[in-house]
Image (cartoon, rainbow, N blue to C red; front, top):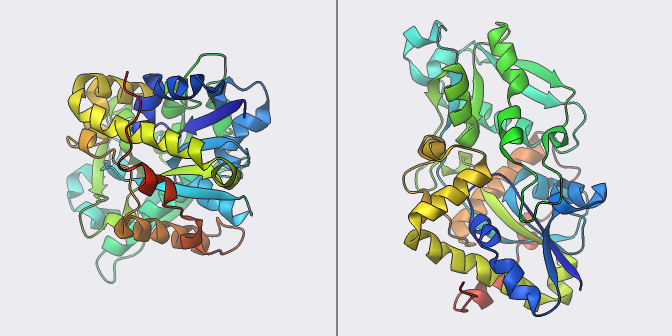
Length: 351
């Protein structure tokens, strides 16, 4: 084993802390094992593993769509942890929209035009899946007999990777500020052209949307883990290649131990943690609370509780029903609690 690779989405997680603090590099240095971000990779295949998951020595901490989709393609990977943090989410309109006068919440969008972004050149269209989940939640909240929203497809030629950060910078993420500000570019343009009445947005993207356009929230979608609608939220999955877990469980356990150490460090180092999270989400630090919540630092725990597994199972069903998965599979069989169980009492590297 020469190199362990990692990738993460622009979300606040324990991985952000362990990576930015250099703990993972320090943990494996004595073994002669490099720890590198896929953004540093010279070959495209390694960088694309952020979505494909087909690299044999890869850890990923990020959104649920790519790993669940990769599993349906037969990629052998395992889910070894789940994180679930509160994030703002809802449907937004421009400041001069007549929806501002409605003040009706979800029912204001009955019969209104909602954008559905479609990446024509991306096999893993994670944002379309996320927006569809938001639309489905909106429809559940409409009163009986209300007309459903009108879905307006927004076809996008630009690939997600067109805005990725690629280069030799150590500890960097593929998805920096540029990628965050770019995700909803075409949807916002459709708003300004008057082609749609509202667009879905969440987390860092919603903070960016409101700050740059003055957009206001027409209808809030609740995605808190501890409320009755938690199945709507956005789980963050920690995954690893099954080959690495089978052949070198010791390395996986040591990786996990560093992330668990980060959980404790975050609550004791709040200011520095916020700076790290702002860096990895592509936000000014003052925007963090707009995209997430005041309890963010307490919500970076990694676990595989029955409740969280069930919530991710709902996401699997959503993707299956909406044609994002190539085939059905036994979702629960893809979860391996071994590393988390073995490391829960372990002592990790401390800087």
